[in-house]
Structure formats: C-alpha cells, structure tokens
Image 1: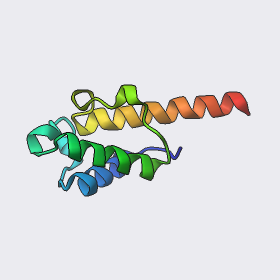
Image 2: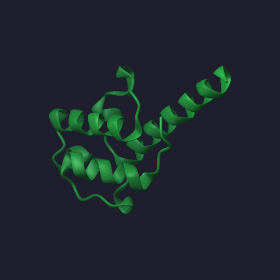
Image 3: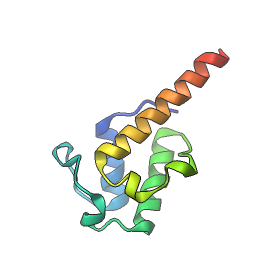
Image 4: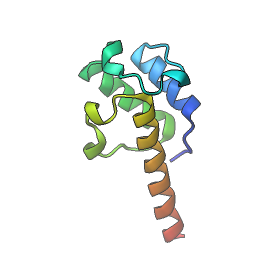
Amino acid sequence: MKSVTMGEVIEVLNAAGELSLTEEQKETDITELGIDSIAFIKVVVALEEQFDCEIPDSKLILSDMNTLQKIYETMDALYEETMGRDNLSA
C-alpha cells in the first residue's frame, strides 16, 4: 500500500465523487453534497486503486466514512496497519 496524504484523498474524492472539496471542508458530510451509496462505491474503488490497497468490508459504511477527515483517517489507519504487518514479516 502507498502512503496516504490528505491532498491525494481530496483529489480522489473530488474526481470519483465529482466534487470540489477543499481541506477546509474536511468535516463536511459528503452525503449532503450528493454522494449516495453508488457514488460512495466509486469513491472506494478509486481510493483502492490510488493507494494500491483493499479497504476491508467492515470499513465500507457510508455513515462511518462520510467526511473527508473520516476517509483520510480510515485510509491512514489502513496504511499504518499494512506497514506494521510488512515490518513484522521482514
């Protein structure tokens, strides 16, 4: 998995979700901006492709990933978890 930055998450979310979010809007509920469950799946797939990872099904709950901040934190935690596993197996 590749490292995660807020800027990259913003780019992916904006492209896949057809939004124009900025970092200042990191607490904005994306469902209020028109992201429905179908658009959310597009965002998830785009995040997985961008960061070369698989987001666990347990994390794929729109209400748990409904802001830029929550999406970033989920991706960053996944990265940290992945890196910890990689370091243990090295």
